[in-house]
Amino acid sequence: MQEKWRLFWAVPLPAPLRRQLAELQKELGFSPRSVKWVEEENLHLTVRFLGDTEAGQVDSLREAVSARLAGIKAFLLEAEKLGAFPSLARPRVIWVGVKAHPSLFLLHQAVEEAVRGLGFTPATKPFSPHITLGRVRERVALPGDHRWAQKNYAFTPFLVEELVLYRSFLTPRGPVYSRVAAVRLSGA
Image 1 (cartoon, rainbow, N blue to C red):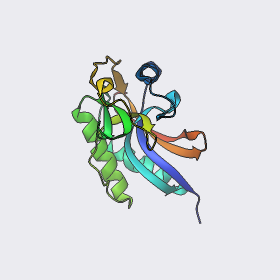
Image 2: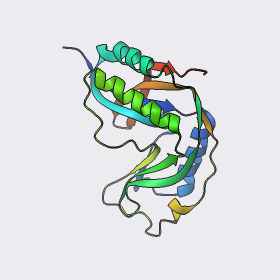
Image 3: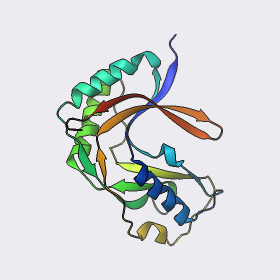
Image 4: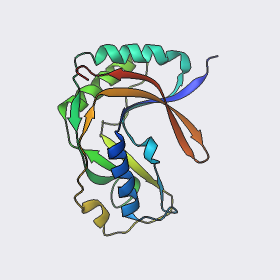
């Protein structure tokens, strides 16, 4: 039986944006007892979570996604606002959204078609592009006025040049991500 790897496709973020987001985490000021923040080096924009996958499928995944992304050119994205899932009233995940860009949705659709072609089940939720900043710990209330989510933030726009297949190792201190494959977009 082949080893299983916990995998996901994501857009890596450039260091200047990751630094801005880490500063925002500090600025929000929530207690570490309230929110488990994503480590700066782990910040990314998930395109498709695959879950436990046979390690031997990595090459097939890279080839299938590469073929589907052939016509998609590198594009500029901009992070824009804070939000929470499932809602600001009952936040479980605090995130930064990105401005809608047609190429991002084409990229997601291409990845979805590629992985479904390899036998993965369809995504169960609609694509909602975001960068997870932190996860709210159970039984903890955040400030009810939601002012933290209503401020305007200016983030450095970033060029989406590649899509990376990451392996996630779950550890007691939090997940550790390693790149196992990457696909460059055309013109990058």
